[in-house]
Image 1 (cartoon, rainbow, N blue to C red):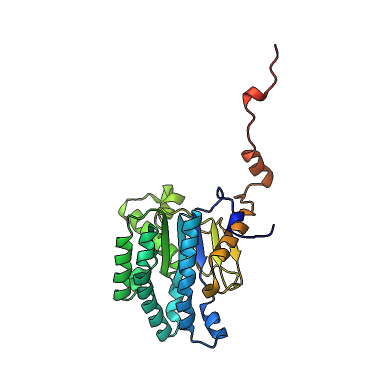
Image 2 (cartoon, rainbow, N blue to C red; image 1 turned 45 degrees about the vertical axis):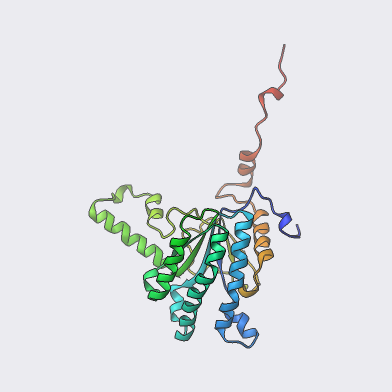
Amino acid sequence: MFFRGKEDLNPNNIPSHVAVIMDGNGRWAKKKGLMRIFGHKNGVKAVRETVEAAAEIGVKYLTLYAFSTENWNRPQDEVNALMDLLVDSTHSEIDTLMKNSIKLEAIGDLDSLPKSTRENLQKAIDKTRNNSRMTLILALSYSSRWEIIKAVKEIAQKCKNGDLNPDTLSESDFVNALSTSGIPDPELMIRTSGEQRISNYLLWQLAYAELYFTDVLWPDFRKDDFFKALFEYQQRERRFGKTGDQLHAETKPVPDASTYNKTA
């Protein structure tokens, strides 16, 4: 089925949580003969359009992979520029977040961020705390392996303190120790730039997510690209380990008793 536009989307099948890997800034800049930081700066418009599209269509949670723990290994000039860009973007977009009632949250090793970056981020989080239309989650200095190890350490300490019994440890105990505690798992993960991997991103949470890869470089990603990803998501059958026949049987409407023939 060919995607024509937003009007093709089924409003009753919008994923509650969409996760995005914003990839391709550097390649976008290189194609234009520019420094990598220009790609990051031009990616801000893609962030704005994606956030607006998600809120507009009814997504409740949008998580953007903004900076991984591995990104600290990039050239220092690029890292510094990214941190400055984060501060500037937080300042410039706060009015948009408030206007659209979007709540800002962040996950990751936030203590590793520069103090000024951390403080400005916290101000935006505090200011948008009571917004309720959608929650925008920035994954900053984040990696899933870091998150999982952190959760294991927290659980181990609770067991040591006697607050948890290792013999009765449940999946929910582990989930509650993750950075995303209280947030539903993503149903859809989008990655731009043509790369087809999840790069240490929400490894636990993406267990049953649909994965969508597009060749569009992040600075060129727009609302229609987001809606196209949702359209592709709606064409898939999410089985969660069951067979298609089982799912169809579960969703088949049960006839009303009044439709059966009655004998005199």
